[in-house]
Image (cartoon, rainbow, N blue to C red; front, side, top):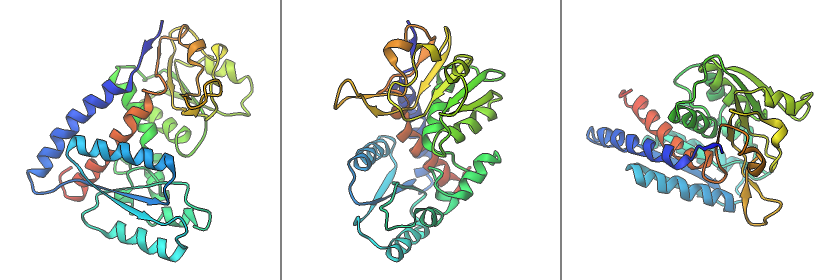
Length: 287
C-alpha cells in the first residue's frame, strides 16, 4: 500500500507559517492584499474564488474581487485590468481564464504588472521562471507540486522525473521547477513513443495531461512517487472527481501517491497566498 501524500497536511503547515509572516508585515502597517479579476460567473471560477478567499481569511490577508459582466468589451476590460494593476493596495493579481471569446486574452494577460503576477499569466513572468529569476512567480499548481514534494522530504537531486503533459499552465513550468532541484527531467505527451514505458522509468511521475484515469498500472513501477495534478469528472461516477491516474490500479504498486481530491488542489490556493505575500514583501522592500 502506497503512502498517501495528503495535501491538507501541507496546506496546514504552510498556513501556519504564512499567518506568522502576515502578522509581521501588518506590524509594519502593511496588509498583503490579493486582487481577484473575474469576468462572468462560471461555476469553476466561483469555486476557486471561494477557496482563495477562505485561505486569505485563514492567514490574515486582505482580498478584493473585481467582477465584470461576461459581455464586457475589449477596451473597457483593458482599462479595468490596467486600473487594478495600478492600484497600490493590490500586491498580487489572480485573473480567471479563459476569458470570453470577444476578448483578446493574450493582450489582456500582459497588462498585469509582472511584480503582481502571482499566477504567471504574463510573458514577463514566464521569462523569469524559465531563466531562474527568483523575482518571477511560477504558476500556483506546479508550485503546489513542488511544495508537496518538499514537505514529504522526497529527494529530487539526480532523480529521474517524468512530466506527463506539456501545457504552459503545469507541464512546462513544473519541468523547470524540477530542474531547479537538479532532477533529470523528461516531458511526455500524447505523441511520445512507448509512453507507458517512459513513465514507468521515472522515480517521480507528475501526471498533468487532463485525461481521467489515463495512467494505469503499466505506467508505474514499485517505489515510484506519483503526483496527480488532474481533476476530471469521473466517467464511472458522474458528479464525482478523479485524477489523471487510475488510483485503484496504481496505488497498490507505487511508493507514494497524491489523492484526487485532497492532493495538489488542496495546496494551490495556499500557494496563491504565499506568492502574494512574497510580492507584498518585494514591493515594500521587506524581502
